[in-house]
Each structure stands twice: as C-alpha cells, then as structure tokens.
Image 1 (tube, helix red, strand yellow):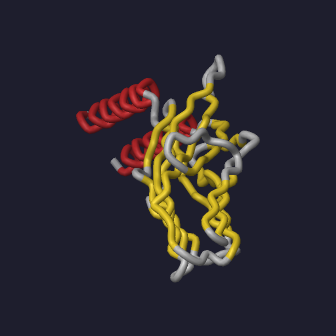
Image 2 (cartoon, rainbow, N blue to C red):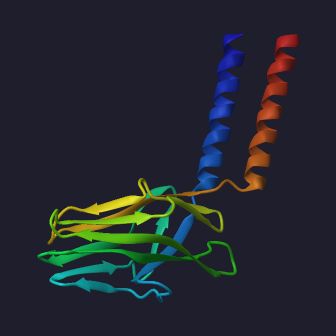
Amino acid sequence: MIKLIVRASLLAAMLMAVTAVANATSVTYSTQGCFGAACVPINTPTLTSGTATLTFTGVNPATTVTTPTNISLGLFSWSGTGTGNFGPINFTLQITQTNPAAPATQVTTTLQGTVDINGPSSTVTVTFGGTTLTLSGITYTIPSNVVQIAQPGLITSIQANITSVPEPTSMLLFGTGLIGAAGAVKRRFKK
C-alpha cells in the first residue's frame, strides 16, 4: 500500500515537472513610453516643469527572457530641484512582444497611467490604471499600480513578473495523465 502511494506521488510529481517545463516560454519584448494626451510612445520621452525634468527610458533594443521571471519595463529618472507642482499628466507605457510561436509576429499593448509631481514634498508618483495585462499567452503583472520616485537624482525601475498562461492542450494532457494515474491507483486498491 505504501509502495502504491509512493508510486502515485512520484508519477504526479513527474507530470507536474513536465507541465512546468512546457510552460517555460522564451519571450522577446521591448517598451516605450510617452507623456501627455494622445501621445506617440518613443524610447526616451521627457516631461519638464519649472526646474524638474522627468525622463522615462524604455527597454530598447528588445530583450529576450524565459518565463516565469521578473523583468524591468523601463526606468524613470528625475533631475532638477522639483519646485512647484504639476499633474496629473497622462503617461502611456507601450509593451511590444514578439510571439514565440512560428511564424514570429509582434503584438503591442499599452498600460495607461498618470504622473504627479509635488515639489514641496519632492515626490514623483506614477499611478497606473491596472496592474495586469496579457499578450498572446504571456501575462505581465506589476506588483503595485503606484510607482514612487522619492527625490530628484534617483532612478526607479518599473518591475513586472511575467508568466506564460498554460495552453489548453498542455492542461488537457496534464488532466488526462492525472485521470490515468487515478485509475491505476484505483485498480491497485481493488486488488
């Protein structure tokens, strides 16, 4: 009986390992951003108010990673003294991904947010409208919808966790394997 339980557990562990390997996907992505309404994303847009300049540097050229992993979607840097207030100003983050399946195709989506600079407290706050988006089976998750740059001179990265969404075929294969393992266990118990 113990042998049977150990064998069933080992089989289930092997099936999960195969599924995990199947879900590891290579992804090539790049990002750009822009400030203002109806803006066109470019690699290094700047926003200036008084003596403060906020710059966003996207991920360009494209970077290839294997999911699941943590990535940077770009960097905010703030220079100047930051006196005075302005905002909220629209900010658009554009993510372009090359689909891993052949033939390679590119898909693009945007994440909308706003930028506020409060000079007296020397803070820049970037607030996104959402924290999760999916592009062709790859999910990008930002830990928080608020990115804070505490003071001039600091560089802040927008971090995201990317994972691949299990394909229906992989899930069907995994489920079929579990049903087969359950049937084998049941037959053993009947004997």
